[in-house]
Image 1 (tube, rainbow, N blue to C red):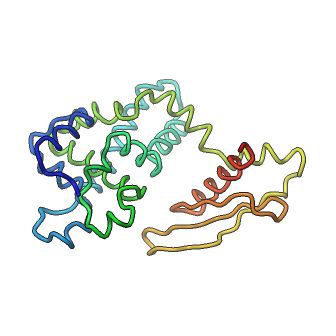
Image 2: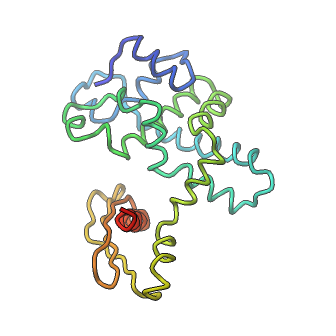
Image 3: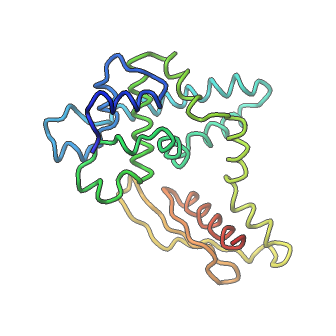
Length: 234
């Protein structure tokens, strides 16, 4: 459970590169809805801030990409923004900032690996962005968010390599096995309609070579292809 001590907030704000005028906004951004089930007197959870932060993140990334890549066309900029705003990338940024250690979760959620769950980390990061926007305005968010990503050009280059594992798997196997050797199969669907989770296996000539999970079939297929590539390289 998150510490409410000033020292705890100070350490986190140091990592964020932003000091809140109203620290209660940061506390709320880190409060998962499950926490209120256990502590109903807590001052709200982070879902509304997440909604706001999602929009702010999109605008901040669009502005930064517009300035960083002055010659790129709209389609390329849109793909770059989508790559930077993917759930796994946001969770990675959240971990780098130390958000998992500061989340306020119910004991049950914490025991169920809540601090490691991508969806919770993604939501918390967007909520923190929303909180920074409310506390310091657009300028504060515009300064902080790109810093969290580090070298965005290098990051996008790495993402481009990772982002198309299905293509890389096809390129590796096609010369020897032809175009029709690879098939993807959904083996499980779980969760409510608004937050589905899919499990997909990739078969090569009928043999399962990798399995992956994701919030969409496409994401799960990419994870399965990535698993197959890792197995081949291992």
